[in-house]
Image 1 (cartoon, rainbow, N blue to C red):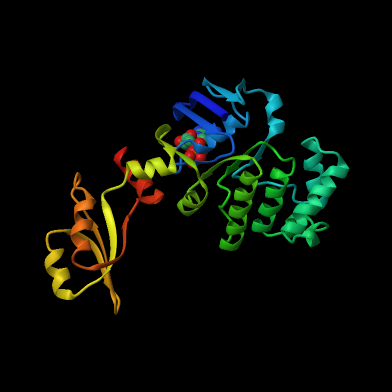
Image 2 (cartoon, helix red, strand yellow; image 1 turned 135 degrees about the horizontal axis):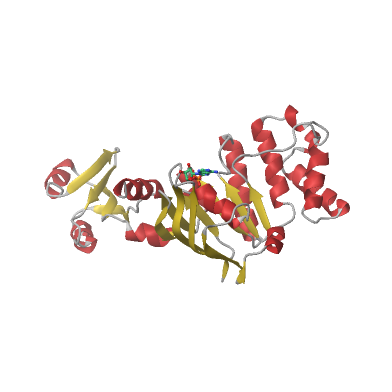
Length: 304
Ligand code: ADP
């Protein structure tokens, strides 16, 4: 089932098209990555989903109903431009924001204690926000985004400004939230996080959607008949056997040779594997799937 659907969304800012007929369907319980270069239209789409701005055209649905103000309570939004009130104390502010989301003071306090313990930030409770570093403020804002246990979480560039340790912490939390049944949409430039987290991606370039699918399907679609073979061999054999193949890389250890090669477009790897099986001891034989970063670059540069 889809928790969120956007159909044919168009948005223009004074002559500048930010979104051109973009549609997305977000499956309930999935992690959905919104990718694209700077200026592609990601933040615009995220703001439309959060009802901060309205599209010029198109329709949005939350759990099958036309998107309305009441749905905001079931969403949690971490904007790219983070902002907490600088002069207010951390705990006081977190409590205030939680109550705005409809939690009672008691419930909010209990949940905040849980999260502050989990992130080991309890000692920040009475500090003013301005006393915290940017990364620390982001942590607090993340907590305030997820505290009311929304069904749909929307993070705009959640990893920007986080050091690798805190980025790792955030990744774990995203996976944990999904395990508990939440659906997560996030925009990012960080392709590593996409590989680790996303079930489904949409790539937007210059206001248009240019790729949409499950990561596993997209990788299958963009694979290039590249194989990595590790085997025990002798130099004479390697040089003659692989002479007619397109070798992309070759490394040797004392015992093994690892070769990455690309077969002709329609050529079948079975023949190569069968031939090799009779000649050498094969340790592994794997197809190399493209990484999201390569697909991103290929798609974006080919649609310039
Ligand atoms: P992304 O988040 O992918 O970097 P944005 O959605 O922020 O992209 O921007 C998409 C396009 O819309 C860009 O060309 C940007 O300059 C333009 N844009 C975004 N917000 C505004 C605005 N408030 N006024 C005018 N143009 C805007």
